[in-house]
Amino acid sequence: MIAENLKSSPRWFVPARSNRTRSLWLAGMASLLFLLCALSIMIGTRDVALTDVVAGLAGQLDSIGQAAVNVRIPRTALAGLAGAALGLAGAIMQGVTRNPLADPGILGVNMGASLAVVVGVAWFDIASAEAYIWTAIAGAGCAAVFVYTIGSLGRGGATPLKLALAGAATSVAFSSMVIAVVLPRADIAGGIRSWQIGGVGGATFERILPVLPFLAAGFAISLLSAKKLNSLALGDELAAGLGERVAVARAVAALGAILLCGATTAVCGPIGFLGLVVPHLCRLLVGVDHRWLLPFSALGGACLLLAADIVGRIIARPAELDVGIVTALVGAPFFIWIVRRQRVREL
Image (cartoon, one colour):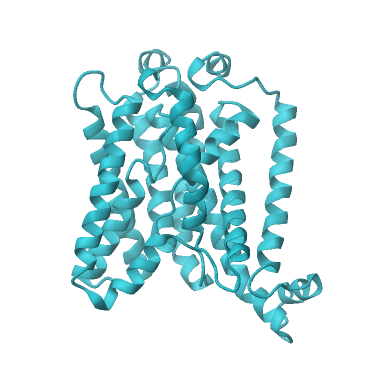
């Protein structure tokens, strides 16, 4: 019943999809993810032959190619995890706010996490991975609450336009504050600037392991919120009439997105636009039912970030472009297209 009402909504209109069609798309997305993982391991400053990939995966280190495989495996794993987290967080935020422009970067959540980490490093000398993660999650949560509060002020409550404007203004303000904190600290400026671009280079399993529990909790909370997001998509009054506690449903789903954004930002830096692009593309494939949309957004985010990382290695050889730059080049035109297509004032 809820899925049928969602399909009839003009705000998120896409053609209806059968479960068989969705299953085929799911298999195709999983196959694409496997292919991109293989390409991520093979392609770089030095291309690696398939035989070396197989040997490297088996733990052999007899050649330069096999050694390169062992270095690229953690990078590939981090790109997949970070992409899945940001794609899923974007879908959650769009569902919670009922805003097609919602995205961890556009709503200022990533920049809030970034500011918190920079302040922690500059003023409190945090150094451990756990401190980075907790600080980033706290910053992401505070930024989300702040933007939603500002966007809710005035007539009409939290409209898509007001949320987008509040998020953009907050992101710019936090970015300026980051610069203000870093400028007097020449000793940390280089590392902070590099981290702020957003990237997965230099990944190791030692960096990834501390963030896994937070990502696992975020994935679990987000995916379990699918049914509640379907109810929220019908409108607050109808959702309440169906027995849904609207405020609690929003808070729980938002908590999952905040965990994903904060943990990812702590280990990769702020990566923008991924959470905007992926959910829109996935809706074209599987429709608006969050029970399908959320897992597809996770898979799609992993695929897109892996692809961006591969492109960044190819187009700037022998140097590399960080994925944050590549996703911005793709996401900014997409954002403009969404604004023009959706006519934000009328949402």
